[in-house]
Length: 396
Image (cartoon, rainbow, N blue to C red; front, top):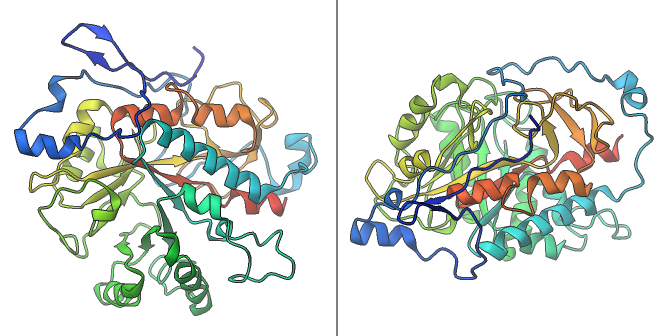
């Protein structure tokens, strides 16, 4: 069976017909979450489950330990791909990728949030500004306009190793970027890797002037596989309706849900929290798709009011356990698949020619694309991973 994006349609039970289409609407959101609270309506009575279908030929994701990558090694780079370094403006192609993805998503839902995971250097034209240094280069304004927020990993703890302080020069470098971008109107998400309460308090204090949301992920390592236990409750927990990221006081991120065992156990753990924003993978264990009914359960904080939910979407590498991966894919076939990524975080993956239209078509541009399915499930936005892939290609 071909593993193309196979998102099930949204069914209108009142008519018994399939609608399943994304409709362009500049007012898109309808403030439906407020209506739910005000009138006690149940969204689920209108729609049957929308499901992300996991194909039979997708590889299974093993928890915590990325499997060895058998398709390439640094010494066999040219042999694996059969090509020389592409003649591409790598940074600009990544910016354009994000810009086009954002425009497509917002053409259907204007308040759909686009969050960049890392990739600070993409916010400036360092590669084209003569004699530029970081902080003096021309801002990448169109790229910045395409974003609603940016998440930075390990600004204070865990850059090199979990729990260890990030080098002071690296911290200064990160904070310098965030300070320069304050006028861009982006929402900041800071993600540290420490379970020490005093370290977290010190980090939040340093971020106070930037008005950043802060979360410290628990061990093991940087797997983002469980909810934080320190602090026990979210900082700034509140009973308010959270319609978008700008109203949030806190957030949590869990991208590898495999330690929870079953999908129901994972969902139950999430709904037993009062986080304003949840950032999760739309597939449990990377392979088991969430459904519309799952999203209805995740939508509400423990106190009963709606929250905002973001999906993780890796646009820079092809993950072999995803629904789109086909058994006959390998480096060079199809043409946009590059060599294996030896630094894969959660499972085997491959570098891709992310500027390839064929690769981008898998991720966005139609209702059957990866992003199309995410939007139909009711996610409020995406956090884009893999943005730093442009730097890997620069060093290729």
